[in-house]
Amino acid sequence: MSHKQAKAAKRKAKLKARKFHAEQHRLYQSGRIADALMDLCADVLPEYVDDSKGIDLVGRNILWRMGMVAWNIAVTGRKEIDDSSVDEMRVDAESKMLVRAEINGLVRRKYEKYPELRTAITDVAAVAVAGGAKLKVSLGDTFPAMPIPDFSDRTAPLTPEQILTKRKGLKLSQAKFAAALGVSVKKVSAWEHGKAAPTEAELEKINSFTPEKE
Image 1 (cartoon, rainbow, N blue to C red):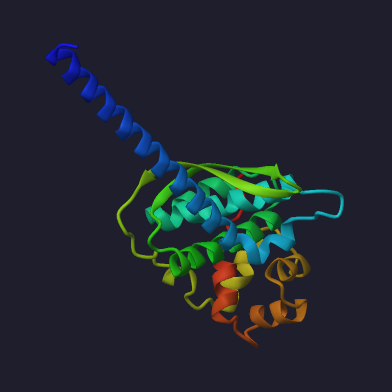
Image 2 (cartoon, helix red, strand yellow):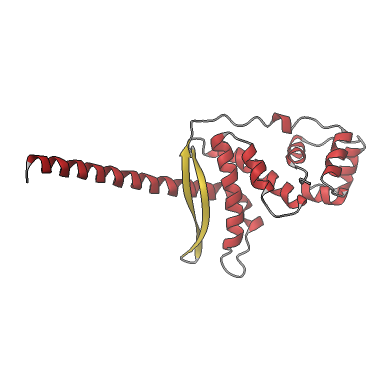
């Protein structure tokens, strides 16, 4: 082998080694982020999954896709990801409100538990593995550390008139509004008549609800 051929072979070997290490790092990072996302969603998993008739991959896909939206908001600092993703869902206004509130909670949990993982997720898939379910993720770009989005505007106090206007804008009865918030109809009525005020957590949920577009 000539000197020129040897040099070319050495370059080829180095390139192959770099590609191998890059792929190994990608696989490691994918597994690490998949585990983190499953952990973030673990507390609310029973609400979306029913394994009574076998592994519920559909329920897991729904939840983990919501988790992906929350993850990307936390990674990029872009709250509008929430709006576009929820608006694309073919569900009624009440379901959209519940989904939005769930995503907000997952965003905060991501900041608290995994601030060092800053790679976005482009897709998720639930797959059956050995009688159980596993999450596979496709990764996107990695972003610099972002401060948690300012949700202060979402928890500002609301007047009784604003609460009433919000409910009517959502086209919900007091009963359905109360059910979406997980409170009693009596409490909603008290808010709207100025006899009581929502807690900070309740305000966050109320302000996360967006009327359906005409």
